[in-house]
Length: 191
Image (tube, rainbow, N blue to C red; front, side, top):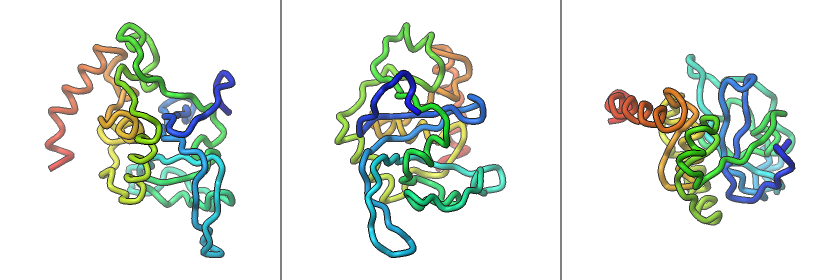
């Protein structure tokens, strides 16, 4: 499950590789959480919960269909900012912890979407931000390039939405190219 025997802590930014490493799915590990059982109407506690941002395919549908999870009751058609169990988040793939405050040199040579030079907020602030987005479901319209799950997780961790996995190249040159492209297209996606 977790790479190199690491232990998850509430407030961690985690990610897993999807579709053979084609892209990474990011979220905030929150530990214990309450979910509503739709069959009984009662709240139940799950031990390993993740808040993450799920998007749509090109037809506006969920990317995959799965039956309702027996642990967290998540259904694959529920999109936007969601709270699920860890199993629903990582779907059998290895989980990695996203690194913060890495040196510029490390950032340049690490794989895109795995780290940031930014400083992370304290875990309680990170969790509060994640729950705020969950309760208000207000992280905006999903965009694979400019408003995705990595943007969500870095916004929770640092207060700034960033995405390094969609870089146009790696490291610093890729980050510069990405931010230039985002600046040019910002008016196309946001008012």
